Length: 300
Image (cartoon, rainbow, N blue to C red; front, side):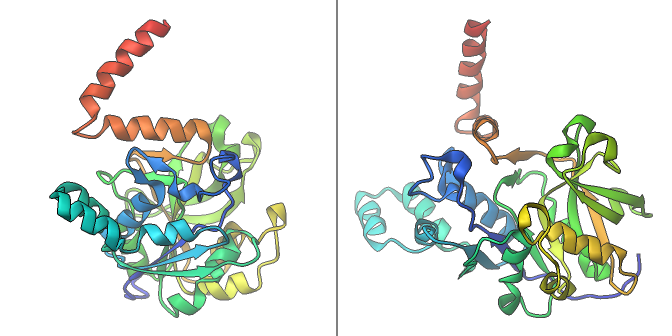
């Protein structure tokens, strides 16, 4: 990999315009991103991950009925005053934490035309510099971050970077899939092709795309001319495929993730994520694991 660019990644784009129909009726009046994962909404984990990677400037691509999400990252003077009066410093700090995470901006997507279209809505804010995209359905354990490695690859190569994860071959049809070639760096591959949700027998590998990207600004020009694809939506995967094939681009790379990832994309995976994250916490883990063992034994 050659040193083609040293542009610093400073900004994160988080698309949150989806309707969350898999979680109806809970999402009728509450954004899916605000559903709690233990005691924090899912979106807060994502913002915390971005900020921990040094991305203090966060743009959320929102839609209608997302006002509670904006309110969560704002100050609530009345609540803070009540907690301060009670002397509940722990809860006061937790409430203030979400409003002090970073510099958070919002823009509406308008028409729901797909992930590629949502990313394109961030063009004016991002400008001509590389940026990260984080999807809210994937929560990455803070003990095994992947964004810092992805950012490093982008800053060294000038290319776009996709997070990849090995999945069982029989599950690859649930994901975007990457055709890759090795580089001289462990855990980093060059992407030669991308396929959206291929049949098992047609998949070029068992490397699935998960919801983290670090994108070169050249992606915007490609998205401007990307025709609607699967689901009649503008697919980010299609735009990345174009960059991977374009010899004049800085290329597309993949970082293979081997840490802990929690999927909140559907009801069962969401429940698993809540249990897994709760079990990993110092204040809840031991008691919950003890109860789970008793409960499972009773089921048997």
